[in-house]
Structures are given as C-alpha cells and as structure tokens.
Image 1 (cartoon, rainbow, N blue to C red):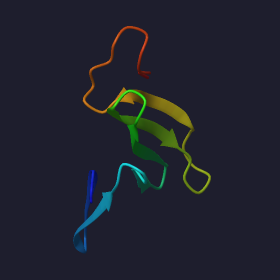
Image 2: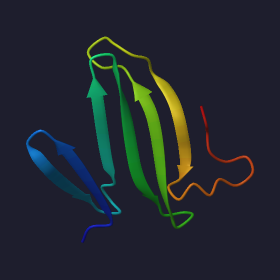
Image 3: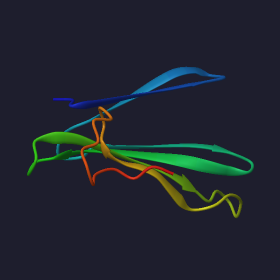
Image 4: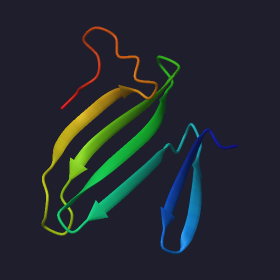
Length: 84
C-alpha cells in the first residue's frame, strides 16, 4: 500500500509514482545547469515522514549542497532541520 505519492508533469503528460514506508520515494528534477533531488522516507523511530532536499550536480553542471532536511510538514523543532 502506498504511503508516499509523487507526480511529474512534462511535455508528455503527467506520470505518478508511489512509495511505501519501506521504500520511500526519491525524485530528481534537472536542467542544463544543475538539479535538485528530494528524498522522502518514513522515520520509524520517531513515527514521522521526513524529507531531504539537495542541490545535486547533473552531467557535470551545478553544485552539491543541502537545502533542507527534516520533517516533511516543515515543523522543525529547535536544533532540527537544515536550511540553506
């Protein structure tokens, strides 16, 4: 059963993908000058859905740099999360 749901819209219409608590879901969106990657997973220890968003290099372009890591709902508690 799906726990996570992803959509992608491009010139060939919409595509969807599902992820479970065990698999999570990873999405990359790229252009000629770099990309961004979003990784979503279930943190069983804290019973929370988490997300990590990162700038990534794409075919030699762009940079590798974290943007955010924390609860997917954005409710960052003191000392949590990472914002660029």
